[in-house]
Image (cartoon, rainbow, N blue to C red; front, side, top):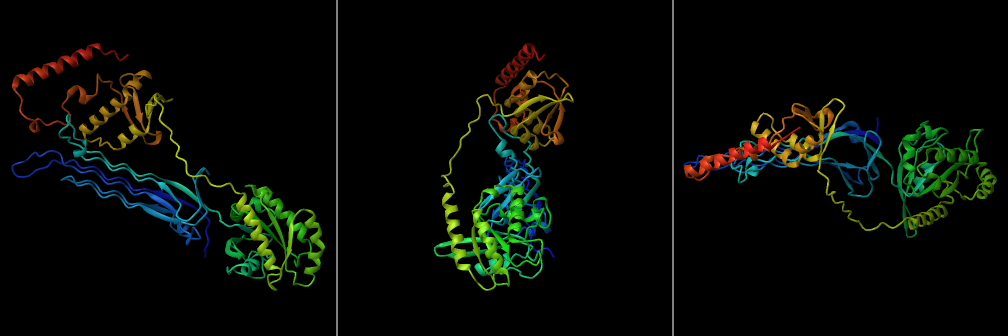
Length: 479
């Protein structure tokens, strides 16, 4: 049964925002008390957070679909809907978040580090929030936005100071078990270790972590053996320790050739491993002929510039010297790291000529409008409500969409699409003299809520509006 998983594909879906409410306050002797529809609640986010008590991605392997809760809809009497609850997903320290194309979205290192994997949708405004001096009684509300959803990939890269690398059965698990309190599985057959093991070592005033990486074989960088599954676990380590078997029973192997093969695999894998400090450990010197072979190959290894230590994990020989030497190398590696600068706030002001949207003519002859605001407004519009559609038209016109369409050469009846190609709202464009609410002055108004005016005044205002609209229509040349 699988107990360790270090790579999963996860489908995350944030909660959708609640719809706004269109309501009119009513009570005895006050049948039309004005709009009182509340706003919808925000949808919950999907958040990844580093939890050092979690060591595997196994839970997400078994349950790869995760969804946050939706926001509640608004209600009358100015009652706003409840926000959706955020879904917090604990992940191990060292988890890398990627998209389906392999692009890194986040590198989560350190307890409590968070990343919003999927953003919840905004709640729709109720008609009370949409009311204004010109629109005293809106008969519509905005819909809640759908939450983001998609596929992400989680990869675990072990966070440790020292990585033990070498052939299967070289004694890496035995070594970590005597250097630290870790208790990995130990047996006399290859590939006993199937998961990385972590241990904490204290040497004087230095405390460091050590990882036992499953055994490597020729071709590991191309995926042979446990190959690529576990080479990623040495990427973060500051020091690489080659554990070489001086008591191997295979006639075609010896410590020097083992070292050359593992080094070739590390170079092939890349990820900057060729520049990490190296230490060589000749293990199993307690076995007959093990000490003799160690004495034979040690001068050759030292001539290559390696620091060499002869140890026996079983007999506990040479362990103290090795642990303090590793502490020294780790301390030097930590000191060589550049100090992290204080967080800098980068301000990127919007360009003065940035309209917030773009208009382009597609190959299919449809004018495509893309931009955060127009796409959000379309998602929040109830197209079954004519007043809501008119409100959308007014907003798009004020943003300058109609003007840009005319500049791009759009004519009456041309197709216009707002949104991504696979989920766009398409309509036939009808240019207007001005925004509907600006010209008519009546959308969303209810004269029963206004103080009565003299008939002559109302007549003069009506005549002035008609003359202004007719003059504007005569002067307008759309083509």
